[in-house]
Image 1 (cartoon, rainbow, N blue to C red):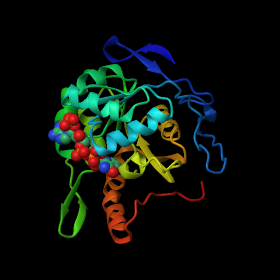
Image 2: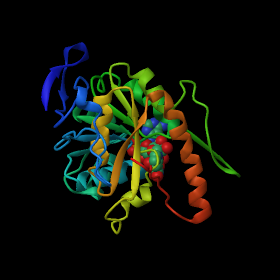
Image 3: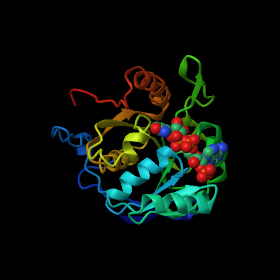
Length: 257
Ligand SMILES: NC(=O)c1ccc[n+]([C@@H]2O[C@H](COP(=O)([O-])OP(=O)(O)OC[C@H]3O[C@@H](n4cnc5c(N)ncnc54)[C@H](OP(=O)(O)O)[C@@H]3O)[C@@H](O)[C@H]2O)c1
């Protein structure tokens, strides 16, 4: 990783591709190993991962898997005490602090708060998150007697809302369909799942694909531009219906790639 000036002159870290890059004509070449990565290989070793709302099920699940994969993990919360408790429960060197401190310190930041608190939290952290890859896994869903359903979002999707309030960040949408229960289950060594990764910055989506693949069993699959995030977020309502009907923790696999 090499520092380069980011927005407002602050230094940001750039991940070096082992092959390819946004300006490399070979960047779209694939490495079609069965079950392996399908994008350019990006080195995410040592990348520190901050998780806003990391005290919840989803945040702790991701934190556990990334910490097991050797990433420095920083759990964020509205309360530093709750964050430290969550970090202790995860172990493997995870640390905890308030969301703002985590947003400022981590190389890459995952947003894992309920949709209700999403916009206000990101608005309050726009400076800390400037120049960084911000990964949004928020599913704007409502629940009633018929189950889960997708909420309308003015900006189109939670990820587009993040991009609107964080104009200086590199927003990527990913990890919408992972089951927090599976991530936390110590008996699950390999997580049988493709993670759809969406965004408008190819280097950032490559990085998040590689990050997803640091979880054994997971494959990161590029899923399109951020404007197509709505249906990926909304599909979670269908997966919740599958889970209820079949008493499962269902995941997705994309075939023929
Ligand atoms: N659970 C899953 O399996 C799963 C899977 C895929 C995606 N997701 C998405 O991941 C996100 C988190 O899911 P979750 O189940 O972990 O949710 P959660 O437990 O309800 O919330 C996560 C954390 O967010 C913080 N939080 C709650 N309300 C907030 C607010 N108004 N403003 C700022 N922070 C707030 C809380 O931390 P503090 O009180 O410590 O600040 C809480 O521990 C959701 O958007 C969900 O759609 C979840």
